[in-house]
Amino acid sequence: MASKRLRITLSRSIIGLSPKQEATVKALGLRRVRQQVTHEDNPTVRGMIAKVPHVLQVTHEA
Image (cartoon, rainbow, N blue to C red; front, side):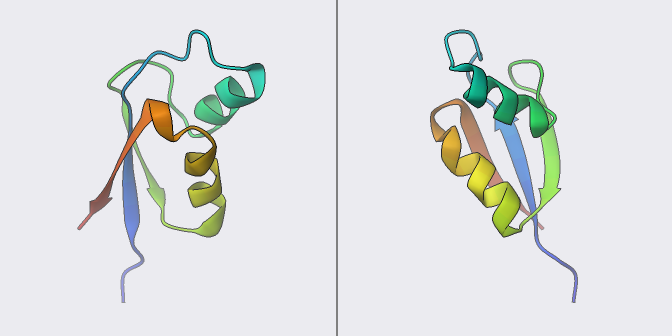
């Protein structure tokens, strides 16, 4: 069975975020607004998403 993947999009600018939040967004691989990355759906990535939900959009990838 294939593992589930998440498509993560940076929907707002990281300007004004705390340094920790900014580092979390960058660790996900996001640099520019509307940039998309794909990650495995695991607790580590879910925890990173939970720290900055107000600047991200997350969808499931088939």
